Length: 108
Image 1 (tube, rainbow, N blue to C red):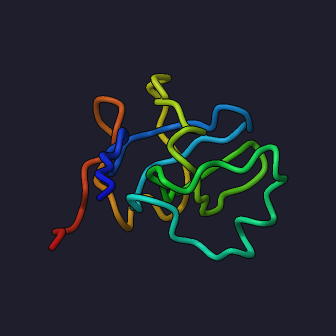
Image 2: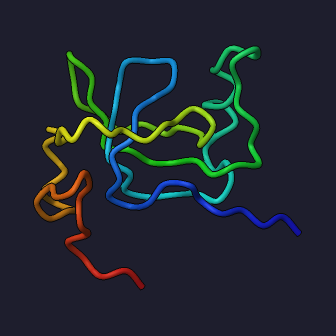
């Protein structure tokens, strides 16, 4: 039985190791849980292993806002102290404080 523990928390601001975007974690899958089509669209030499946590992010770059699905190995914590401006952040989180966002809703 595989036991996986997520490194990043809901509301935490992270950035991608290789690509110029950052985002707020709003959900975590303990292992890959997306389509095979999505997975196969990643160049083989860059495909992450499936047996690690994958994070759903409210992401932003200099040009747009979007939802990203990123493996734990491709993320690093963002210590810039800057908020994420994604327009959906207020729907899920409270005001940015101490480098992260508090949840605005109850989890089951």
